[in-house]
Amino acid sequence: MNIKYLSFRHGLFLAPMAGVSDYSMRVLCHRMGAEMSVTEMLSAKALHYGDEKTEDLAKFDDLTSPCSIQIFGHEPDIMAEAAAMLEKRFKPHMIDINMGCPVKKIVTNGEGSALMRDPCLAEEIVKAVSAAIKAPLSVKIRAGWDDKSKNAVELACRLERAGADMICVHGRTRMQMYIPGIDLDIIKDVKNALSIPVLGNGDIYCAADAVHMLNYTGCDGIMVARGAYGNPWIFKEISCALEGKEYTPPAVSERISVAKEHLSMLIADKGEYTGIREARKHLAHYIKGMRGATTARVEINAAESAEAVTVILDRLLDDNK
Image (cartoon, rainbow, N blue to C red):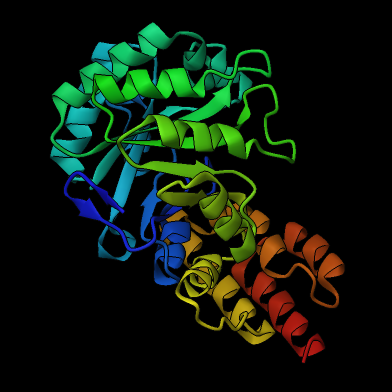
């Protein structure tokens, strides 16, 4: 898979997820085979007003490269300004525009997936951002707003003409939110309509899901979201499947070890108080299916120190030997 200035073996991307795909998560997924990661979405308006916390979300290094920085907004000039500033300051390998977020507070402001209801404005935004940067520009969209308005093909064609270098399609409508079941046909239709690379996204929880999406839709790559929760190894699993190699799932000891490392990185990055609280959702997935996981999850959610969490994880490891 090739895209302006960039080349990928399989096109395996870690999706942008608010509160999830932070620096620590991206480090682990890159180590396990993710070929590119996308940051949590950054508000173009917040960047316009110099919000330092927003800029902190954009950081990356050699451990998280190549990296794409995702922005959201609805004003073409401010989106272009934010993209240009991020490119100059951080030199990301790609800039991504969010036109898929279904969260109410985002769409109420005419941003995220709300832009699928205004193709003209969406096109203006892509034109403005494309003209402002030299890096490749991608756009993440959904199938449409609802079942009666699945306009991903029409919108994707407009965005390609406006300057997008890649499109990622989440095979659900905005109204579906994250309800199980995706429309692979809409991803296939977008792929067939465009000359630029197309990524498929949605319900990829194992290698079989990824291979099926790639084979059915013909898309150039896939973007893994919730399937990477507590399972950064999913990228290795998918790579092995695509290369005809045997994949050995991580043993309990490795899962616990990486869970501890994830906790340590979050604390180092965000401090113990915030790091522990943000680690809870990740740890619940790392230990899923282990003996005693239900009790351990309750205890982890009540723990207030890294030491306490580590004791719980060590006990869980002993119980699963």
